[in-house]
Length: 228
Image (cartoon, rainbow, N blue to C red):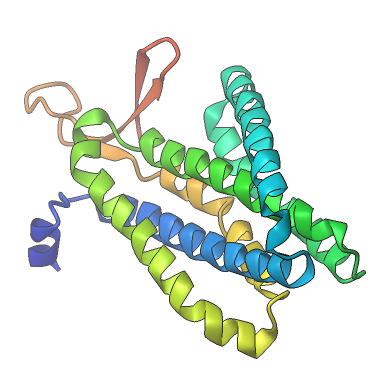
């Protein structure tokens, strides 16, 4: 394990942090891949490709509005809480929309199409925001490629299992798998918050050798140091 950690440039004490964030990105990417595949299949079956031009226009407008709302919200509220709340909101919306799908109304498939687009945007924000919140700039240069590999692997695995899962549980129930992936997130960022520890760099400084957590308030560029 130490040889693998050395190859991946994971330093002592960073294993839990890397495992938590990579796992978070893996599950999220696999879930959104499965959800998007299910939504696309349902959309083309019930609506058809002729509606795509209008849907792409609606997707652009919806994405712009969502980004403006998200930017304003992140500026007003604590970002760490926001990174926990966002996947929970996505999960709640997916629950409601899956229930409406069971009523066999056609308009919900257009809404699902837009939901996936907005969810992809939100996911990029809260996943990489959570990753950035538990690393400093120096560690990010080493660890972000590993975090990205978790996201890539999750997308690949999600794509590979889409077909077998769709045949086993039905295309509509891929939304439930996506829901499960979303519901796995709220505890994961909180777990990551406790992993961003490093040792004090100065050997002769008071308290040297004790693990410390470094948290930052990015808006004011101020830093607070506390014992873990």
